[in-house]
Image (cartoon, rainbow, N blue to C red; front, side):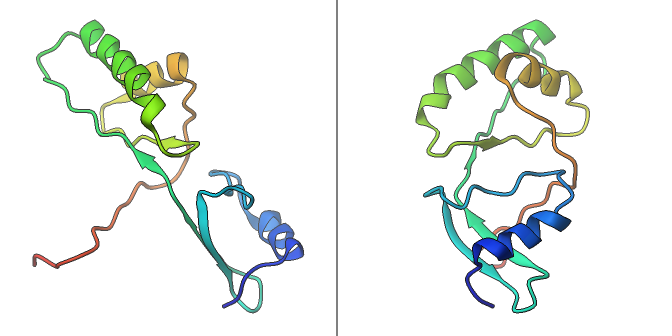
Length: 122
């Protein structure tokens, strides 16, 4: 593994399928990049922010939508990075639509996954 060159990044972009954007290599949010010796794979470490929103399921749809907008307008000034990723539970299409329409979020394709680092509990 090694640090990539500009020409390496162009090779990576050529086989990137575009379902998720590649990070801006000039950004201070990208803290580490490495590429395989044959330039066929790479790993990017990028600081991101995550916003967790909990709501009482008994709230009306309009009340939920209003509160989503209020929360995001309130917290966005405190987000430490240039982008925020939102993971919406199954059945949350109406809230995804609200974020797209009113907060300029974009949908991505793929499978959302996470890993907890630290002490194993199993």
